[in-house]
Length: 147
Image 1: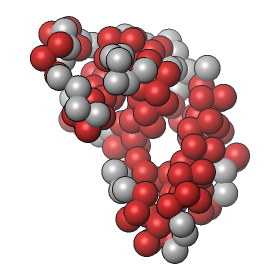
Image 2: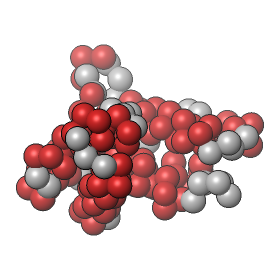
Image 3: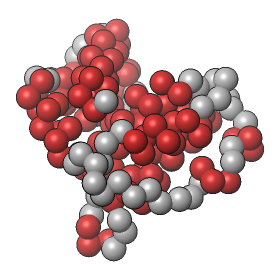
Image 4: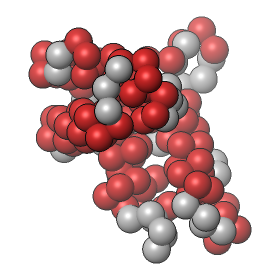
């Protein structure tokens, strides 16, 4: 599975408040989170689960930006994407393991879990700006290695 699913969903959710590229970056993080939390025994395909996790992330972002969610098409709320022949997310995780250090990985995991920059700053005893720089660095690594 590559970024194709994220690209498709980002294109559908792009608005004047949230540009497609910003959604793409956030969607890649949601895709990795979906892969890390996926439970095969649930009987749901990974693609279906990932599309739901990404869609929920986009909806949350749009709500926070003040976007009117009524403008979204119904087809963004459902759908299954068959990407079985695409690159596996384990490859992405492997690349990131090799390219980021332990503190970056811990901050990235906290970001994916939904912690705010302020919360992460308190946990890791770092200024908000440093947290933001680390998150942006990891996002760039994801984008460089997934496209």
